[in-house]
Length: 240
Image (cartoon, rainbow, N blue to C red; front, side, top):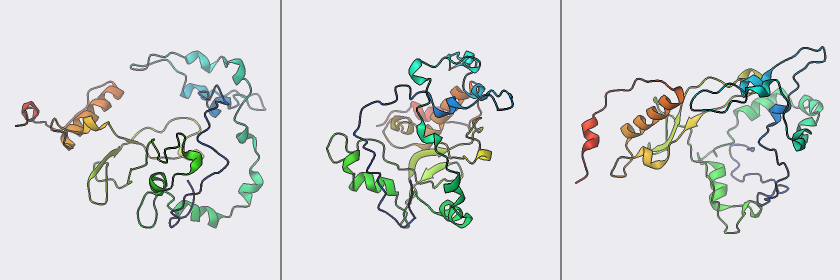
């Protein structure tokens, strides 16, 4: 996304047509990071592959640790298809002043000055023709709705203080080229499907939602976790 905080007209790349269904890269599941050089010019060997290709731990049962030492790309993947990464951007970067970079960093390109999510507005009202794959003039995919307005428990709230369902959580940074030291950082949030946020009456229930999030956390960690006391009798009652 780009543009300043007051620009509600999202820039649309006319050269890219989301209606295109031709698969040009049949090994797109192999990411650009997989083409990282593992040997320096001086012969030093590095093993960045260990960050992804490891011995499995439940509930992941895929053992592809051999890919740390074996290059087993299919034939069509032996040539790096991510040609956009080959461009030397040194001169372009040098031409960008510190002031321009600081201005970009402090500019909100997610919300307008009025506090509206700009991409959501575009997808709801001004869908570009080259994004309309079925020609029905409406976006059928996900529309951004996280407000990035988190309370003390990490739950995202709307301007009227209702819950969007998104919750931010702490995590260990993933190894490799995505470390903040390399200029990459992000927010991580989770939202369970609507039935897991509701009680048996179909109403949003924060306590039920917290319990279901705790179940997910326990599964991912493969260990018991501590939760606040819960009134289990409450969930045995049936609506009148």
